[in-house]
Length: 322
Image 1 (cartoon, helix red, strand yellow):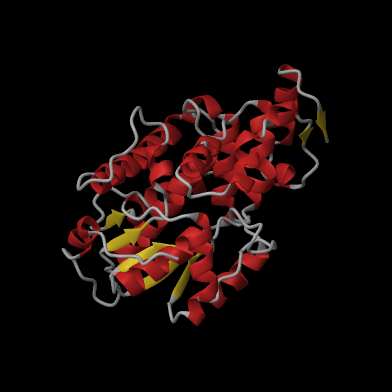
Image 2 (cartoon, rainbow, N blue to C red):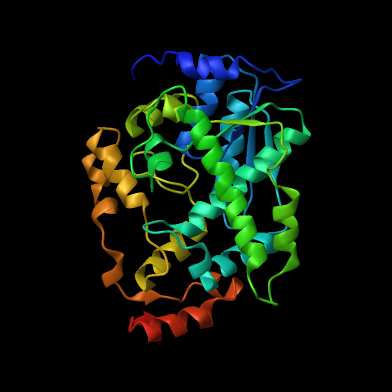
């Protein structure tokens, strides 16, 4: 593992404000990126860190144990925000059934907007608790996704990324309010309104703009600090989180053509830069559209979208099991 040195640009940004008890709330998913982010900001930048997780109601139960173990081992306080599960159930239903409103070319709009709502939740928490910064674990490849040109890691990049994130939230919120659907659960609109980022006195930082680190180096360091994968796989096989929406719903939506997994393009960029191994190339090259759509998971009934997806399969001549 190479030595990590401070970025002068990032250091200038975070030196502008100090919090009362904590300097930064790290968006913590229990995964490798957010775990390393905690280490980076605490031990390299010497910030007072608080880990803040948001429970969407569909996480692997092992994740909460792994989260607690890592934060306790590194003396990091952990806050878990638990909105009403109906908020996220309704979010996923709306993003599926009203895909035309939220769809963006070559983008997994479901995870894209869900992650944005998680971010807004942490911003609201930080603002309410006088924490001046929120740290996001999005990579430079992820932040550059959908842009005509990759984000340049200069002194303007963090501000550009933050403004883009704010705009994504506001666009999603306005689109949601504009949908003509009398069945939309008011809890979703109320939650968006509660965490509305407008007027919040919090700056979001994206340290991975200025620190591009390989997956293996990340895992090597945080495993020494007591990190274990949030999904029940070995450290060697671990790639991403244990969110059941990603593992059970998203891949089936891709087969139907409702979303596009732009994560594949991000993986290719990281592989080309040597940040991911060739063993992880299978994910980037896998063509899910050829597979049978599996609608047997009870999550489809829980989200009340099974009948809708069956109709889409029939409309698009997709073979499915129910």
